View 1: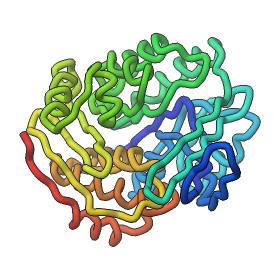
View 2: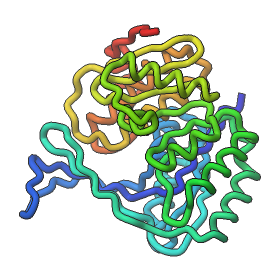
View 3: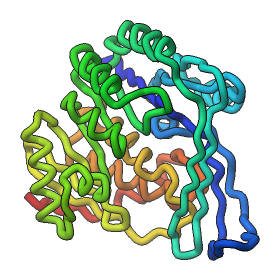
View 4: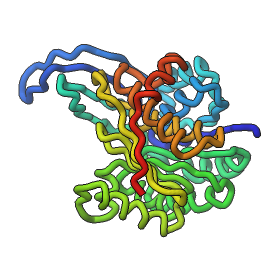
Length: 312
């Protein structure tokens, strides 16, 4: 098995991550800078997979005016770069973590994709993505890409690659779900928006996950923050709870979970093992300033501390 993965990030960002004991509006806040990282959801997934020795090709859009940090990131991690350069700058997202672990995001706007640039991306990507075992599509849509256009591209991609892992939010999530991807990973809030109602308990979350499965989605994974993660598929439903971790930054925790899920599925591991692995990778991420797996030993230790329960 070739075990080749591609990740698509249409609206990447430089993440400026900082620690601030308490954010007070209308005054000066002293911030301890934890790092400035070339990021975006698919690129974070790719970083986790490269740390686990999986070959990854990355694609999407990058602003031509500030591409250097991303080019360095791809080179350092031996990723094959298929990004399309467009006029303008890739956005910067400021993410501040307070002492209680709460994260406040300031997501700035970036480049705008023209109709011609989108058509070029569609034609190019549909020529090369079909050769991969799995394709991860994640993140928001940049200015210029309407949800309907994105949904149409996803449907075409679904014909080429049956194993699409999809992680997005808001209008991009609704549009992408129309293509019935193989696996989706919303968080509870995103699932509530899709369902159009609050989901106050685990039973209600499981019921909505089955609604998604009935629409043709094989695997539904819902991240529940400190409560862990729920996976619902044809074999059953499992809840994985991580141990308490000192939070440095929750940035990229969901993306790290996706990376762990992809790795376990590629390795043909059981749902239980894969969910334990993915939850462990996510838990490690919140205890460090950036995305990635520092050591297999550390990962194995965290996996042993995950509480896994069959819930359906």
